[in-house]
Amino acid sequence: MIRFDRSYRTLAVGISILAGFVDAVGFIESSGFFVSFMTGNSTRLAVGAAEWQDAALVAGAIIAIFLVGVVGGSLVAAYSRRPRAPVVLILVALLLAVAAGFRLAGAVPPAIAFLALAMGAANAAIEGRDGAVVGVTYMTGTLVQAGQKIANALRGAGDARWPHHLWLWAGLVAGAILGARVILWSPPAAYGLAVMLAALLAIRAAMIARSPG
Image (tube, rainbow, N blue to C red; front, top):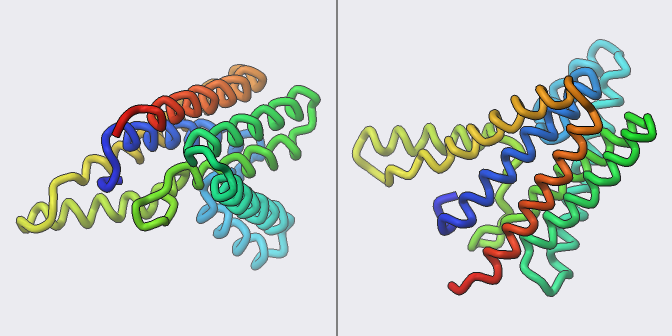
């Protein structure tokens, strides 16, 4: 996070808000599975396998779909001649729109599958200076980095830019709260709002890409 200017850090927080929102929607729609947090699904897969439960198959399928989304988003970014972030976020918006279409038709499992595809693709939106993409839909590593930087700051070493990492975490939590509230009120509204947020982020990313410097 600290390797980017303020505009990209803000964009990353926005994507985290989207991820939290969509993850909460997927969690409630699937009765306890995640569409952006694959560590949780991995644990569900393991426990389900140990107990011979169908939950293992569901978790495994979502993990595989998420991975396909990461690969697809990365390939779209690599082969596009345009800046990475807006192209990937347009893809995310389209995938979420397909999910919304399935949900409006009453087909919940395909809708959840496209939510996971979209969240996988979202992780290809922002690329670091070393060529590595920045994961923005899961927060364990982000919290670890924040903790390490806080420790360094307390002993007078390193930098004091750990709040950037906490903003990512806070964005995901805030998005998840909003997503849970909206999906419980109106599923169509929740899916529609997810598409709208992704589209706004794509527009914002395009504006950043066009700005000088």
